[in-house]
Image (tube, rainbow, N blue to C red; front, side, top):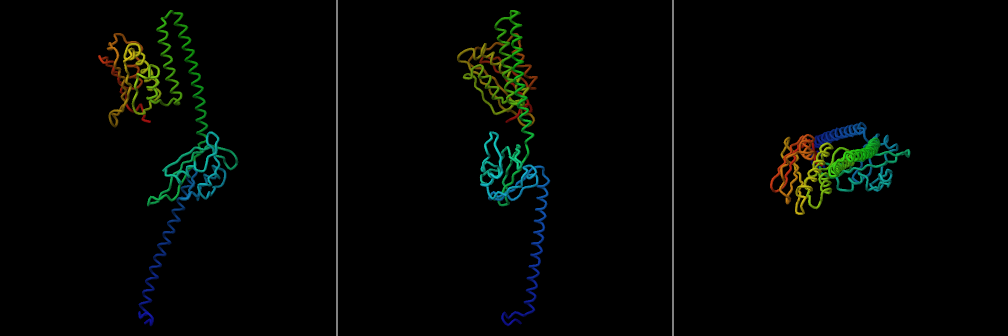
Length: 364
C-alpha cells in the first residue's frame, strides 16, 4: 500500500495502465486524423495542379499562402507571398485605359476586405519577362462550417486570345457596317434616279426612301449590338422618336429580340407609325399611341405579347386594298417571328397585337 495515498500499489498500477491505454488510443486517433489531414492536403494540391487555370489562395488577412504551378507558368514569375492586401502591388497589371490596377481593385482584396461573394476583373498583366497579356481574375471567399471567412481563393484565366478575337470581330463589324451603309446609299441613289426617269410621283418616291431609311436604321442598331440581338425597348423608342415621342408611350420589361425578329418588328413599328401619322391617331393633335409589351402564359406556353393601341384619332376604316405596309405588319411579321397578328379597326382607334412564342426572345 502507498503510505502517502493509502491506495494499494496494485490498484495504482492498474489505474496507470488504464490511463496509458487511453493516451495510446488518443495518440492513435490523433495520428489517424493527422494522416487523413495530410492525405486531404495532398489531394487538394493534386487537384490544384490538375486544373487548367491558375489558382491562388490567401488567408483571412489576405496573405497569399499558395499558388499552383499554372500561376508560375502563366505569369512567368514565382508566386509572390504578399503579406496582406496592401502589398498586392507586387502583381503588376493595368486596366484597358492603361492605368495601373490598385491594390484594392484586385478581386482577392475585394473578397477579403469587402462583403462580396464574388469579384471579377479583366487586367492587362505584366509578366515576369516584361511581356503583357490579358487575364481574367475571379475571386471568392472561403467560408468555414460556422460561416466565418477564413480566407479567399482566386482563379486566373488567360483570355488573351479571347480579347484578340473580340477586337478582330469589332473591326469586322465596323467594316461591315460601313460597307452596308454604302450599299444602302447606292441602292437609294439608283432607286431615286430610276423613279425620276419613270415620272413616278414625289409622294411615292418619298415613301420608298423613308422605308429604306427605316430598314437602314434597324440594321445599324443590330450592328451596334454585334448582330446578336436588340432590346425591344430600343426598337420601340426609336420608332417613337421618328414619329413623335411626346405622343407615343412605350412600356414593358427588358426583353431582347434576335436579329431576325428585331428587324421584322422594327419595320412593323415603322409602318404602324407612318399610318398613324397619315391617317390614324397621330394625324390629329389630341391623338395618342400606347406601345406596350408583356410576357404571358407559363412554362412551354409562355409568349411575348406586343400591343399597339391608338386613341383619340379619327375612326379607322378597314382597308379595302392591302399594300406593302399591310403585308409588313401582318403576314411578313407573322412569318419572321412565328407569331400571330391581330388587327382590330374599331371606333375607338386601331388596335394591333403580335403574340410570338417565348423561345424567339430572351429576358435580359
